[in-house]
Length: 286
Image (cartoon, rainbow, N blue to C red; front, top):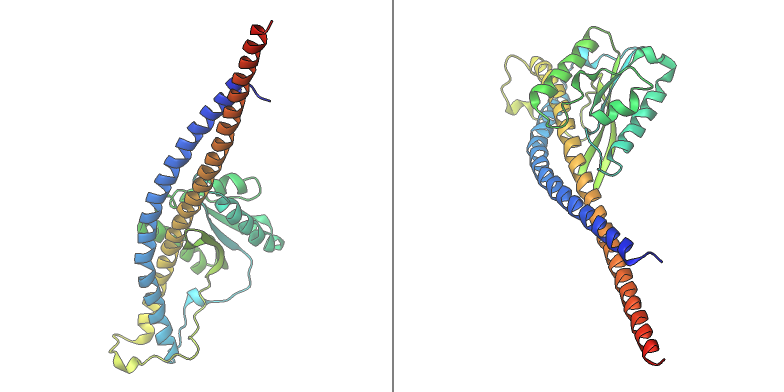
């Protein structure tokens, strides 16, 4: 059995850890509330923009855009969104595992034809040994800003339009709730535009200038820029949710361990007192 001094040292160490995890949970919770507000404010706008596109498509408007062009896949860009720091449970490892699966699916193209855009230092640390990374945008996920997201979207659109890449994939984490985050894999380009089944748009209720076709063409680049921004906000909220849960679990574990150590310390102290009393009684009887 460990000595009382050793147990007391362990108790002190666990108490210090408990203070750290409690503080980190509080910070993560505060950041989560801000991230939740940001994504909840953005989603209605993003969904409404998508609804406008679907409404025009349902009315029979034909969209011919270079952003929807399907062509043989020879070069692929994969945007992987994780975090800059750890202590967030399986948040980073789940994203990186999914990214590896996606990249392995394109292994036949050769690594020279795979462009990886990491968002977050953890992605860089995990993938730089196996793939050539474009690190220009790696820091934009910590505090997502529309300007940075737009720059990344513009860069990807330019590569696609110039036929330097034939497909763009997104790997990120979708925030559902504080306890639930889902790793997503989506195609960013070419853009798949399909009318929603069972829905028809009453475009006669609107006066569209200069034409529905041109309006849709103007909306497409905006929708693509908004998609990247929404993904960054979504991932940011997921990160803070995962860290909040991880720090709560660490705090709970520390409290449980502290209770066990206190019980062990009290038992040891009681045993020491009992032994001293026995020694005193034994000595007095001689």
